[in-house]
Image (cartoon, rainbow, N blue to C red; front, side, top):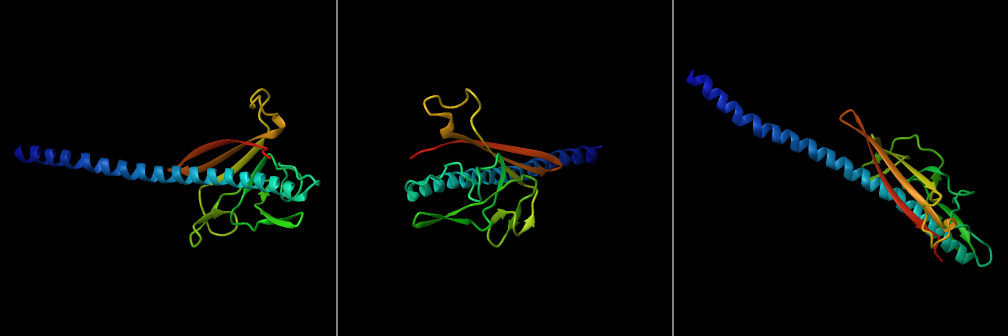
Length: 183
């Protein structure tokens, strides 16, 4: 009887710390994925911001020739749903006497991101497939949802959605940013 009680006490002493260790490992893995997702979403927003800033710089360099602040570097206006890739070669636009490099927007949101370990980057060109995917939505603010002291045509909402699978469950992180046409 004493042996059974001793074994029960030893088991209780071991189960508690082991379960805490397992929970800590799970929390670390989950936190690492969330941090990666936040960084991927922020990178997507920053690349759209770079396109906006380069459009405005190009408009300034062109003089009287107008460059719309919402222009897609590959032509037309920015798509409403897009992938943006830091690994893909930037496109160069001639603006007056200057040449400005722009990231490209792909009119798609269907691919998983690849991780290039040697460069430490995520993209769609080279690397190992991950469970992360990123979609950038670029829209005009909703009716009545824009800053009223600035014309709605001088505002755009950029929404970066990163989705990944973790332990069999699909996770989603959404970051929103409102960009303005400044001159």
